[in-house]
Amino acid sequence: MLGIDRRVLQTAWTLFLFLFVLAAIYEIRKELVLFVFALFLANLLSPVVERVHWLIPPSGSRGPAAAVVYLVLIGILISLAVPIGSRIAEEATVLAKRLPAEIQQDPLGRAPLPGWLEQVRPRMDQFVRDRMQQFDQDVLPMLSTAGEQILSGIGTVLSLILVPILSFFILKDGVKIRRALVQAFDPGARVLVSGILTDLHLLLAHYMRALLLLAIATFVSYLSILALMGAPYPLLLAGIAGALEVIPMVGPLTAAAVILLVAVFSGYAHLVWLIVFLVVYRVFQDYVLSPFLMSEGVEVHPLLILLGVIAGERMAGIPGMFFAIPLIAALRAILARVRKHNREPAEV
Image (cartoon, rainbow, N blue to C red; front, side, top):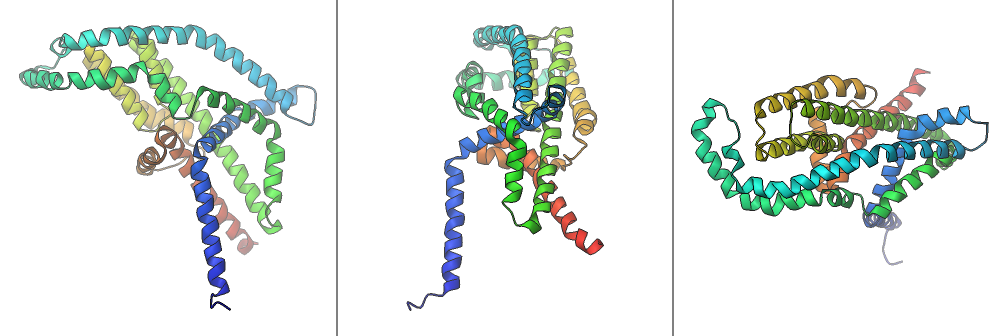
């Protein structure tokens, strides 16, 4: 009647719904980040909960098994966090108090340099002096509020409490949730959707276990070597390296820069050997340990990892850098499952 084509109206309505969904996702992006963290934690604990579920008296729900795993995990975390966390906090406090004085005393003048660099030491001294004010304004506040900066990437302390709660319900009712998702699709697509959910579950579980093992290996290796080499603040620096290991590529580089910065401003005498250790361990981690742990399902080209990390940081900051690799791997797994599903009818 008004000369408007029905197909145009359907297209406009579809576009409106698409934009509405995007706007809704943007508005609840922080809550979605919490849910995704909970999903990651649930996939990490799922194999343990499954084994405990078969050991305890049989029941229809995995709730009791999840509760047992949570209680044991909380006990382990408390027993480790009290002695280690207090020591790390002590070293961080000492460093934050001493670093301003070390900067004012021209620590680069006491830092050992190879002979071929001695001729450019005056230029390096001037470079450091020009940026002392910047260090005092930027680096020290970052050290004193490091915990707050990390927490701000995922929300408040209350949000951290919500993550394990959400993860508990995912572990408890994961089978029911998966069945409901599969049943929501047409019968012809249910096999494909079930296969995609299985692939994503295995991928996330393997990725989280590998990431946890890499972080633990980094913490133990850095703590052992830094302590043997007599480096300053070994527990604090090892904790920083282990925590940043979960951020692909950028995290390890940042940890190495922080360690070298602290060593230089503390007047550490074996700076060259420290650099050798950082390079050797990075090569071992990137070309031996990480490929061994990530070899199953998480096969992403390094260039794609770098681009994903940069894009993730631009879009969502620290959480975006953390989610970049699993998101790329998940898209790869979904495409592989769809291609396999499309080939099956032709092969029959």
